[in-house]
Image: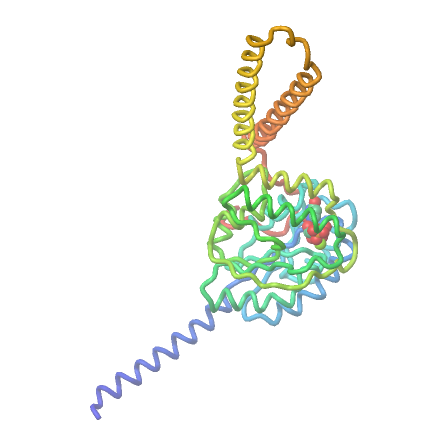
Length: 343
Ligand code: UDP
Ligand code: MG
């Protein structure tokens, strides 16, 4: 065999081994950031820490946990700081007041330094044991995001599940952006997707819509609903109702179109009605006074529809009003980390 050929093969092998080694070193250079919004969670934050840290320690990349205190009134912020003193991987951001989960998540994403960024609830309804699998999929397969969805709503009040299902059906009919039923905010994304989400600086945030609107390839992992480890849900029925309205208004203008269509239909009905009245008056002039109860009904109905339509317009106008103010999505009181690519 040709000696130069053998030399070439050996050189190629060496190069390959070297490249592989580089790859190994590279993965250790990568960072996973996990953003965890917390609002009055003193009962679970330590449980979350104890459950998650062993999982993250077992990964083949570095990690940081970013706790965001969303204006808690209990000891949540103090506990976060204690955890940060104990472990360098723990970062915290304390917001100046309660901005809502959406604001808290955005704050966390702004500060996440990672090549991979995850979002998790602190109440252990999002099982940390899924993290290695999620990360592995992102590293090995052609996806930019691994999301999770609950396939059951076990442990949730029946009426709440019913309205949730109705909401998903309604919003998916009205908008082109697909909102997956049962999708949780628990997900890990690659940097490119996080940057895209951060570029959407709208004030009225509906993350489930934003995640879907930015696109990218998402793989869904399914799991059974898990009940809260401790404490109580922060979402009352009324809060959820307002949130779902926000979702519809943020992602579709279909209600405006429906209002216009109703207007056209009623104009058409009125035109036919006028025609009938005129013809009847010409044929039989004596019966003009009769029928006022039906008239009142029609006036009430049309009046009601008009108010509804103005209400829909008002909803969009109020959201536009808030957007034009360009208020910050969150304000920070204290933190031990910096914004990504800034400061
Ligand atoms: N959360 C928050 N700000 C709020 C409400 C909730 O940061 O105003 C956090 C909360 O601490 C938790 C997550 O959002 O980590 C989900 O909240 P919760 O478990 O109450 O919601 P559910 O699981 O019932 O939908
Ligand atoms: Mg929860």
